[in-house]
Structure formats: C-alpha cells, structure tokens
Length: 380
Image 1: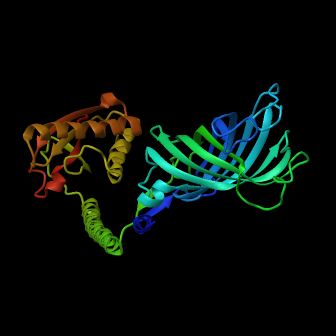
Image 2: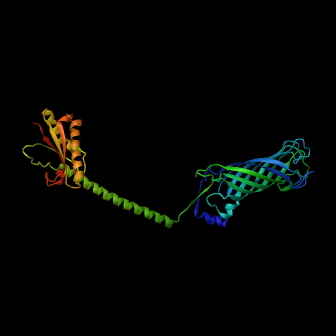
Image 3: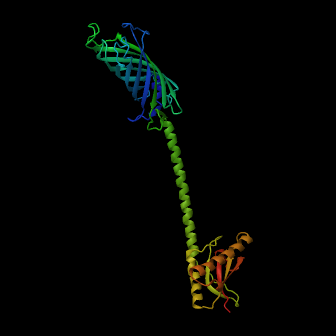
C-alpha cells in the first residue's frame, strides 16, 4: 500500500467516468461439499456450475461485481449433490468487492499486467429448489482470481478462480432443527468449494483504451520552465511580426511614391511620332498595375478616334540583371500592353505591332522610368 501511495503522488489516472471500466464475463466450473453430507463429501461429489458476472473497476485497486451462478445436477439422481432431483439444484446471486492485489502492492504501470492476482469477497442470496435445505438463504463468497490480460489492448481477461461459498443463514420446510437457525455464521456443513474458469470482456473507456490510463504529472519547477520557453517564443514571434509589418509599410510607401511620380517625357527623333502616355512596370515584372491602365486607355481612345491609326509598342527594361533576361522581359511588356488594347479596349490586333528593345538607361536617369512600354504612331 505504501508503494502504491508513493507512485500515485506523481501520476494521475484517466478514464474513470461512470461509463468507464465496465466488464462482462462468463464462467464455469465444478463445486464439491466442504464436509461430508449424506453419500457425498469433499472431493467425493461434484456439481457443475455456470455463472455470469457484470462488474466495474472503480479504481485501479477496488471494484464491484454482480455475479449470478446456477448449480446443475441430474433429475434422475435421487442422491444429487444438493439433495434434490431438479436439473438446476440451486442459484446464488452475489455482490462482490474486487481487490487487485498486484496494483495494490506494486502500483499501476499505465496498463494491466499480463498476469494479475485479484481477491474477491462479498455476500449473496441463495435459493435451493429441493432437498432437505429447500428454500432461501444468505451466502458469502471468498475467492482468488489468477487473471491473465490478453490482446494488444488488454481488453480480454482470462482467469482461474478457486472459491469458497458459505451458507450464512438458511431456513426451509425440510431442514433439521440443527441446521435451521437465524444466527449469521459460517457453517462448513452448508459450504462449497468450487473451481471455475472465466472470461471477461472489458468495454472501451473515455480515454480511448479498455483500461485505466496513467498520465505523468510534472512538478512546478518543470511547469515554470516550460512557461518561460513559451513566453520567450511569443516575444520572439512578436518582434519578428513587428519587423515584418514595418518592412511592409516601407514597401507600400515606396510603391505609392513610385506610382505618384510624374511620367518623364523622353525626347525622340523627329521621324517618330511618340504618343505621350507611357506604361510603367515594376522591376522584373511584366504585369500591368491597375493605375497604368489610364495610359493604355488614352491610346485606345486615340485609335478609336483615328480609325486609320496604327501603333507600335516598344518595351524596355532597366539595366539591372542579365541582358538575355531583360530582352525577354521587354518583349513581354510590349505583348501584355498589346493584349490589353485588343482584349480590354477592342482594338484590332492588326493595327498594333510589338517590339522588345531590351535594357536601356537612355530614357531617364531614374531606372524606374526605364521600365516602360512606349507607343509610336506608325500611321503613314
């Protein structure tokens, strides 16, 4: 008991609700008189018996079980073990307390052991159907279970049970005055020794197993250390989030400043009729920002107002990066602007040509204004 108490200080048991740790079982065996009784005596006569047991383990050590047992005989045997000729000689219903001695003295390890030793004791109500002791009476039962827990989940329990069942108080029409009394006492003349084999099935519990589960408890110093780690992680996360928020705000402002800059007009050769609207792109991108559609719409309106007008779109890239990449990027920029004119503003595709001129630093001293698509009026 001291070992179990010390172990319990650092553990907690889960799966102990009302619906948890119930089991149902059957058992069968033989019984023999404790003393000589007529032509029968200890190991000189046997009565087969069958039983049904419903139980609940209240703790890892203590439980309760309700058991019903029927003792059978032969109707043709005038000298049956119980002194009567009925097929069912007697029945006995007992309420038993169960004590897991293995867990009591060695502690519970989180799941049942393969082999466990259990003690059972309780009181019952007996009815005999014939013979000199026909009638009802109180009984007591003491037993030891040599139990084996089987299966990966330890849901099945096979046990061998030697037991002694005593009659405490009996009365009946055919009993002698020596046996018929109201004193509650153990009398081996009304006792049986029986040996049974049983099988129990343990129903599932709320912890997901078929048994009690053990949860290790942590001391306060360990809890404080874990809380400190959690708080450190939260602070580090908050600092990183704050830094990222600041960077996002800076980039948004830079983008807004870029979008709000006036378009710098680039002087072109006299022979080229450069239309003033330019489409400005972000570095390394060939997608059109929403604010740039205003320039494309101006060119679309010009072409709608001048039905014979034709336009060449020249794409440029700023000088950062490799020349091959910048060449392809300038071509893509010209193509996406053409697609916008055709698909969004319904300008005929054969009125538009595209040309990618690669990287340049000639259009402006600011690289932001070298990432553009320009419109050249090629109408002759």
